[in-house]
Length: 376
Image 1 (tube, rainbow, N blue to C red):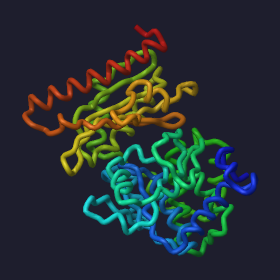
Image 2 (cartoon, rainbow, N blue to C red; image 1 turned 30 degrees about the vertical axis):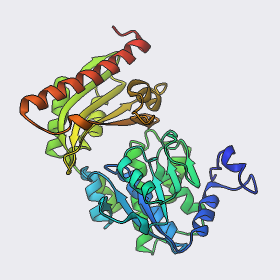
Image 3 (cartoon, helix red, strand yellow; image 1 turned 180 degrees about the vertical axis):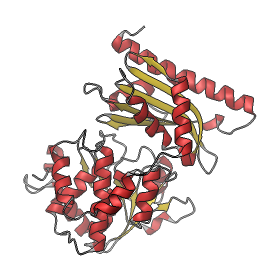
Protein backbone atom coordinates (compact mmCIF):
# COMPACT_ATOMS: atom_id res chain seq x y z
CA UNK A 1 0.00 0.00 0.00
CA UNK A 2 1.47 3.40 -0.95
CA UNK A 3 2.76 5.38 2.01
CA UNK A 4 1.03 8.62 2.87
CA UNK A 5 2.68 11.89 3.70
CA UNK A 6 2.99 12.79 7.35
CA UNK A 7 0.28 14.91 8.96
CA UNK A 8 2.11 18.30 8.92
CA UNK A 9 2.61 18.00 5.17
CA UNK A 10 -0.97 16.82 4.65
CA UNK A 11 -2.32 19.92 6.34
CA UNK A 12 -0.92 21.98 3.48
CA UNK A 13 -2.70 19.93 0.83
CA UNK A 14 -6.23 20.22 -0.50
CA UNK A 15 -7.04 16.62 0.39
CA UNK A 16 -5.88 14.32 3.21
CA UNK A 17 -5.77 11.39 0.77
CA UNK A 18 -2.82 12.51 -1.36
CA UNK A 19 -0.09 9.87 -1.41
CA UNK A 20 3.63 10.54 -1.44
CA UNK A 21 4.13 9.62 -5.09
CA UNK A 22 1.18 11.80 -6.15
CA UNK A 23 2.63 14.78 -4.31
CA UNK A 24 6.07 14.15 -5.84
CA UNK A 25 4.64 14.16 -9.36
CA UNK A 26 2.67 17.33 -8.55
CA UNK A 27 5.93 19.08 -7.59
CA UNK A 28 7.74 17.81 -10.68
CA UNK A 29 4.85 18.83 -12.94
CA UNK A 30 4.98 22.34 -11.48
CA UNK A 31 8.65 22.53 -12.52
CA UNK A 32 8.22 21.07 -15.99
CA UNK A 33 11.02 21.87 -18.45
CA UNK A 34 13.58 22.90 -15.82
CA UNK A 35 17.09 21.63 -15.13
CA UNK A 36 17.73 20.07 -11.73
CA UNK A 37 20.79 18.81 -9.88
CA UNK A 38 20.43 15.49 -8.04
CA UNK A 39 22.84 15.63 -5.11
CA UNK A 40 24.31 12.42 -3.69
CA UNK A 41 26.06 12.16 -0.36
CA UNK A 42 29.82 11.93 -0.20
CA UNK A 43 31.08 8.52 -1.36
CA UNK A 44 27.67 7.40 -2.69
CA UNK A 45 26.50 3.84 -2.12
CA UNK A 46 24.22 1.61 -4.25
CA UNK A 47 21.05 2.84 -2.55
CA UNK A 48 21.86 6.48 -3.31
CA UNK A 49 23.04 5.77 -6.86
CA UNK A 50 19.99 3.70 -7.78
CA UNK A 51 17.55 6.17 -6.22
CA UNK A 52 19.16 9.00 -8.18
CA UNK A 53 18.69 7.13 -11.45
CA UNK A 54 15.09 6.38 -10.59
CA UNK A 55 14.54 10.07 -9.90
CA UNK A 56 16.15 10.96 -13.24
CA UNK A 57 13.80 8.56 -15.03
CA UNK A 58 10.75 10.01 -13.25
CA UNK A 59 11.87 13.59 -13.88
CA UNK A 60 12.20 12.91 -17.60
CA UNK A 61 8.44 12.34 -17.70
CA UNK A 62 8.08 16.04 -16.93
CA UNK A 63 10.81 17.02 -19.43
CA UNK A 64 13.14 17.91 -16.56
CA UNK A 65 16.85 17.52 -17.33
CA UNK A 66 18.99 16.25 -14.46
CA UNK A 67 22.65 15.94 -13.55
CA UNK A 68 23.63 13.48 -10.81
CA UNK A 69 26.49 14.96 -8.79
CA UNK A 70 28.46 13.55 -5.87
CA UNK A 71 31.29 14.61 -3.56
CA UNK A 72 34.20 12.37 -2.60
CA UNK A 73 34.98 9.30 -4.70
CA UNK A 74 33.34 6.04 -5.74
CA UNK A 75 35.60 3.45 -4.19
CA UNK A 76 33.67 0.36 -3.08
CA UNK A 77 34.21 -2.47 -5.57
CA UNK A 78 30.47 -3.14 -5.83
CA UNK A 79 29.75 0.54 -6.51
CA UNK A 80 32.36 0.62 -9.27
CA UNK A 81 30.89 -2.55 -10.76
CA UNK A 82 27.39 -1.10 -10.55
CA UNK A 83 28.26 2.05 -12.48
CA UNK A 84 30.34 0.20 -15.09
CA UNK A 85 28.11 -2.78 -15.83
CA UNK A 86 24.92 -0.73 -15.97
CA UNK A 87 26.67 2.21 -17.70
CA UNK A 88 25.45 4.71 -15.11
CA UNK A 89 27.01 8.16 -15.44
CA UNK A 90 27.75 10.20 -12.32
CA UNK A 91 29.48 13.58 -12.17
CA UNK A 92 32.00 14.42 -9.41
CA UNK A 93 31.43 17.84 -7.90
CA UNK A 94 33.65 20.57 -9.35
CA UNK A 95 33.58 23.87 -7.40
CA UNK A 96 34.30 25.70 -10.66
CA UNK A 97 30.95 24.67 -12.20
CA UNK A 98 28.30 27.38 -12.46
CA UNK A 99 25.49 26.07 -10.26
CA UNK A 100 23.10 28.85 -11.28
CA UNK A 101 22.27 26.75 -14.36
CA UNK A 102 20.00 24.68 -12.11
CA UNK A 103 16.47 25.69 -11.12
CA UNK A 104 16.21 23.18 -8.29
CA UNK A 105 18.15 20.73 -6.13
CA UNK A 106 17.08 17.20 -5.26
CA UNK A 107 18.60 15.17 -2.41
CA UNK A 108 18.23 11.37 -2.35
CA UNK A 109 19.34 9.02 0.45
CA UNK A 110 20.60 11.90 2.59
CA UNK A 111 19.65 15.34 3.84
CA UNK A 112 22.70 17.37 2.97
CA UNK A 113 24.71 16.72 6.11
CA UNK A 114 27.60 14.85 4.45
CA UNK A 115 28.28 17.25 1.56
CA UNK A 116 28.15 20.67 3.17
CA UNK A 117 30.44 22.30 0.62
CA UNK A 118 28.07 21.49 -2.24
CA UNK A 119 24.95 22.34 -0.21
CA UNK A 120 26.40 25.72 0.75
CA UNK A 121 27.47 26.40 -2.84
CA UNK A 122 23.94 25.68 -4.08
CA UNK A 123 22.48 27.96 -1.43
CA UNK A 124 24.94 30.71 -2.39
CA UNK A 125 23.92 30.31 -6.05
CA UNK A 126 20.25 30.73 -5.10
CA UNK A 127 19.27 27.19 -6.13
CA UNK A 128 16.17 26.17 -4.13
CA UNK A 129 15.87 22.79 -2.45
CA UNK A 130 12.87 21.18 -4.11
CA UNK A 131 12.89 17.53 -3.04
CA UNK A 132 14.34 15.34 -0.28
CA UNK A 133 13.75 11.57 -0.30
CA UNK A 134 15.53 9.59 2.41
CA UNK A 135 15.21 6.70 4.86
CA UNK A 136 17.51 8.06 7.56
CA UNK A 137 16.27 9.94 10.62
CA UNK A 138 15.19 13.54 9.98
CA UNK A 139 18.17 15.92 10.29
CA UNK A 140 16.56 19.34 9.80
CA UNK A 141 19.34 20.67 7.55
CA UNK A 142 17.17 21.37 4.48
CA UNK A 143 13.75 22.96 3.95
CA UNK A 144 12.43 21.38 0.72
CA UNK A 145 9.15 21.93 -1.07
CA UNK A 146 8.60 18.16 -0.92
CA UNK A 147 10.01 15.81 1.71
CA UNK A 148 9.51 12.07 2.02
CA UNK A 149 11.64 10.89 4.95
CA UNK A 150 10.48 7.60 6.42
CA UNK A 151 11.76 4.45 8.09
CA UNK A 152 12.25 1.87 5.39
CA UNK A 153 15.14 -0.45 4.70
CA UNK A 154 16.32 1.63 1.74
CA UNK A 155 15.59 4.76 -0.26
CA UNK A 156 15.32 2.35 -3.21
CA UNK A 157 12.15 1.03 -1.57
CA UNK A 158 10.57 4.48 -1.71
CA UNK A 159 11.46 4.95 -5.38
CA UNK A 160 10.12 1.50 -6.24
CA UNK A 161 6.83 2.69 -4.75
CA UNK A 162 6.94 5.88 -6.84
CA UNK A 163 7.45 3.81 -9.98
CA UNK A 164 4.76 1.30 -9.13
CA UNK A 165 2.13 3.86 -8.20
CA UNK A 166 3.00 6.74 -10.54
CA UNK A 167 2.24 7.45 -14.18
CA UNK A 168 5.54 5.96 -15.39
CA UNK A 169 5.01 2.23 -15.94
CA UNK A 170 8.10 0.06 -16.18
CA UNK A 171 8.45 -2.10 -19.28
CA UNK A 172 10.73 -5.16 -19.36
CA UNK A 173 11.41 -4.43 -23.06
CA UNK A 174 12.84 -0.98 -22.25
CA UNK A 175 16.61 -1.18 -21.46
CA UNK A 176 16.48 1.96 -19.30
CA UNK A 177 13.68 0.44 -17.22
CA UNK A 178 15.62 -2.80 -16.76
CA UNK A 179 18.69 -0.82 -15.71
CA UNK A 180 16.87 1.23 -13.09
CA UNK A 181 15.05 -1.83 -11.71
CA UNK A 182 18.34 -3.75 -11.46
CA UNK A 183 20.07 -0.83 -9.76
CA UNK A 184 17.19 -0.36 -7.29
CA UNK A 185 17.23 -4.07 -6.46
CA UNK A 186 20.95 -3.82 -5.72
CA UNK A 187 20.44 -0.75 -3.54
CA UNK A 188 17.63 -2.48 -1.67
CA UNK A 189 19.65 -5.64 -1.09
CA UNK A 190 22.77 -3.85 0.17
CA UNK A 191 20.95 -1.52 2.56
CA UNK A 192 18.89 -4.35 4.08
CA UNK A 193 21.83 -6.78 4.34
CA UNK A 194 20.30 -9.07 1.71
CA UNK A 195 16.83 -8.63 3.27
CA UNK A 196 17.90 -9.59 6.80
CA UNK A 197 16.80 -6.12 7.97
CA UNK A 198 13.96 -5.75 5.45
CA UNK A 199 10.40 -4.84 6.42
CA UNK A 200 7.12 -5.42 4.62
CA UNK A 201 7.61 -2.35 2.39
CA UNK A 202 11.04 -3.60 1.33
CA UNK A 203 9.77 -7.06 0.43
CA UNK A 204 6.91 -5.54 -1.56
CA UNK A 205 9.37 -3.33 -3.43
CA UNK A 206 11.61 -6.32 -4.19
CA UNK A 207 8.64 -8.29 -5.50
CA UNK A 208 7.76 -5.42 -7.85
CA UNK A 209 11.32 -4.79 -9.04
CA UNK A 210 12.00 -8.47 -9.67
CA UNK A 211 9.57 -8.33 -12.60
CA UNK A 212 11.90 -5.95 -14.48
CA UNK A 213 15.44 -6.42 -13.11
CA UNK A 214 18.18 -8.48 -14.78
CA UNK A 215 19.65 -11.18 -12.54
CA UNK A 216 22.87 -11.60 -14.55
CA UNK A 217 24.49 -8.17 -13.97
CA UNK A 218 23.02 -8.11 -10.47
CA UNK A 219 24.84 -11.35 -9.67
CA UNK A 220 28.11 -9.98 -11.09
CA UNK A 221 27.80 -6.79 -9.04
CA UNK A 222 27.03 -8.61 -5.79
CA UNK A 223 29.93 -11.06 -6.24
CA UNK A 224 32.70 -8.45 -6.19
CA UNK A 225 35.51 -9.30 -3.77
CA UNK A 226 36.98 -7.05 -1.11
CA UNK A 227 39.99 -5.09 -2.31
CA UNK A 228 43.48 -5.58 -0.88
CA UNK A 229 43.46 -2.13 0.86
CA UNK A 230 40.13 -3.01 2.49
CA UNK A 231 41.51 -6.30 3.80
CA UNK A 232 44.56 -4.44 5.17
CA UNK A 233 42.30 -1.95 6.97
CA UNK A 234 40.21 -4.79 8.43
CA UNK A 235 43.44 -6.37 9.67
CA UNK A 236 44.45 -3.04 11.20
CA UNK A 237 41.08 -2.79 12.97
CA UNK A 238 41.37 -6.32 14.37
CA UNK A 239 44.78 -5.49 15.83
CA UNK A 240 43.72 -2.29 17.60
CA UNK A 241 40.05 -2.80 18.46
CA UNK A 242 38.68 -2.30 21.96
CA UNK A 243 35.79 -4.54 23.00
CA UNK A 244 33.63 -3.45 25.92
CA UNK A 245 30.02 -4.24 26.83
CA UNK A 246 29.52 -5.99 23.46
CA UNK A 247 30.75 -2.89 21.58
CA UNK A 248 33.78 -3.22 19.29
CA UNK A 249 35.61 0.08 18.68
CA UNK A 250 38.50 0.52 16.24
CA UNK A 251 40.44 3.54 15.01
CA UNK A 252 42.20 2.63 11.77
CA UNK A 253 44.41 5.71 11.28
CA UNK A 254 44.88 7.47 7.95
CA UNK A 255 43.13 6.42 4.73
CA UNK A 256 43.22 7.73 1.19
CA UNK A 257 39.93 8.96 -0.23
CA UNK A 258 39.60 6.01 -2.60
CA UNK A 259 39.64 3.64 0.40
CA UNK A 260 37.02 5.50 2.41
CA UNK A 261 34.40 2.76 1.86
CA UNK A 262 36.65 0.37 3.77
CA UNK A 263 35.41 2.00 6.99
CA UNK A 264 31.78 0.76 6.79
CA UNK A 265 32.99 -2.57 5.37
CA UNK A 266 35.27 -2.96 8.38
CA UNK A 267 32.41 -2.12 10.74
CA UNK A 268 30.31 -4.82 9.04
CA UNK A 269 33.17 -7.29 9.49
CA UNK A 270 33.70 -6.49 13.19
CA UNK A 271 29.97 -6.92 13.80
CA UNK A 272 30.30 -10.58 12.79
CA UNK A 273 32.51 -11.31 15.82
CA UNK A 274 30.98 -13.44 18.56
CA UNK A 275 29.45 -11.46 21.46
CA UNK A 276 29.60 -8.14 19.57
CA UNK A 277 26.31 -6.36 18.90
CA UNK A 278 27.70 -2.96 17.85
CA UNK A 279 30.83 -2.05 15.87
CA UNK A 280 32.23 1.46 15.45
CA UNK A 281 35.15 2.15 13.09
CA UNK A 282 36.72 5.51 12.30
CA UNK A 283 39.76 6.99 10.59
CA UNK A 284 41.14 10.20 9.08
CA UNK A 285 40.37 10.30 5.35
CA UNK A 286 42.32 12.56 2.97
CA UNK A 287 40.52 13.53 -0.24
CA UNK A 288 41.98 14.53 -3.61
CA UNK A 289 42.17 18.18 -2.53
CA UNK A 290 44.20 17.37 0.56
CA UNK A 291 41.29 18.05 2.91
CA UNK A 292 41.03 15.80 5.93
CA UNK A 293 37.96 14.55 7.76
CA UNK A 294 37.50 12.12 10.59
CA UNK A 295 35.06 9.60 9.09
CA UNK A 296 33.27 6.96 11.13
CA UNK A 297 30.72 4.20 10.69
CA UNK A 298 28.48 2.40 13.17
CA UNK A 299 26.78 -0.96 12.64
CA UNK A 300 24.55 -2.66 15.19
CA UNK A 301 22.37 -5.72 15.55
CA UNK A 302 20.91 -4.49 18.85
CA UNK A 303 17.31 -3.52 18.14
CA UNK A 304 16.97 -1.11 21.08
CA UNK A 305 20.08 0.90 20.12
CA UNK A 306 19.25 3.99 18.04
CA UNK A 307 22.35 4.77 15.91
CA UNK A 308 21.10 8.27 15.08
CA UNK A 309 20.68 9.30 18.70
CA UNK A 310 23.80 7.45 19.85
CA UNK A 311 26.05 9.30 17.40
CA UNK A 312 24.45 12.66 18.14
CA UNK A 313 24.82 12.14 21.89
CA UNK A 314 28.49 11.15 21.57
CA UNK A 315 29.73 13.75 19.08
CA UNK A 316 27.33 16.68 19.50
CA UNK A 317 27.19 19.62 17.09
CA UNK A 318 29.56 21.91 15.23
CA UNK A 319 29.80 25.68 15.71
CA UNK A 320 26.79 26.26 13.44
CA UNK A 321 24.60 23.91 15.46
CA UNK A 322 24.66 20.98 13.02
CA UNK A 323 25.27 17.46 14.24
CA UNK A 324 28.45 15.75 13.11
CA UNK A 325 26.56 12.60 12.23
CA UNK A 326 23.37 10.61 12.33
CA UNK A 327 21.88 7.38 11.14
CA UNK A 328 19.02 5.01 10.55
CA UNK A 329 17.94 1.73 12.04
CA UNK A 330 21.00 -0.54 12.52
CA UNK A 331 23.55 1.85 10.97
CA UNK A 332 24.98 5.35 11.23
CA UNK A 333 27.93 7.49 10.27
CA UNK A 334 29.77 10.67 11.16
CA UNK A 335 32.17 13.17 9.62
CA UNK A 336 34.24 15.71 11.54
CA UNK A 337 36.36 18.23 9.59
CA UNK A 338 39.97 18.35 10.76
CA UNK A 339 40.18 22.04 9.83
CA UNK A 340 43.24 23.93 11.05
CA UNK A 341 45.14 20.74 11.86
CA UNK A 342 44.71 19.30 8.34
CA UNK A 343 47.83 18.46 6.34
CA UNK A 344 50.24 15.59 6.52
CA UNK A 345 53.28 17.52 7.72
CA UNK A 346 56.09 15.53 9.30
CA UNK A 347 55.52 11.87 10.20
CA UNK A 348 55.80 12.69 13.92
CA UNK A 349 53.18 15.43 13.50
CA UNK A 350 50.79 13.07 11.70
CA UNK A 351 51.23 10.44 14.41
CA UNK A 352 50.57 12.95 17.17
CA UNK A 353 47.48 14.27 15.39
CA UNK A 354 46.05 10.80 15.00
CA UNK A 355 46.76 9.99 18.66
CA UNK A 356 44.80 13.06 19.76
CA UNK A 357 41.78 12.40 17.56
CA UNK A 358 41.77 8.68 18.31
CA UNK A 359 41.97 9.27 22.06
CA UNK A 360 39.22 11.92 21.98
CA UNK A 361 36.74 9.89 19.97
CA UNK A 362 37.48 6.67 21.86
CA UNK A 363 37.06 8.49 25.21
CA UNK A 364 33.67 9.88 24.18
CA UNK A 365 32.46 6.51 22.95
CA UNK A 366 33.59 4.70 26.09
CA UNK A 367 32.05 7.37 28.32
CA UNK A 368 28.71 6.97 26.54
CA UNK A 369 28.88 3.16 26.80
CA UNK A 370 29.88 3.36 30.46
CA UNK A 371 27.04 5.78 31.26
CA UNK A 372 24.44 3.51 29.67
CA UNK A 373 25.84 0.07 30.47
CA UNK A 374 28.09 0.57 33.52
CA UNK A 375 30.80 -1.33 31.69
CA UNK A 376 33.77 -0.16 33.73
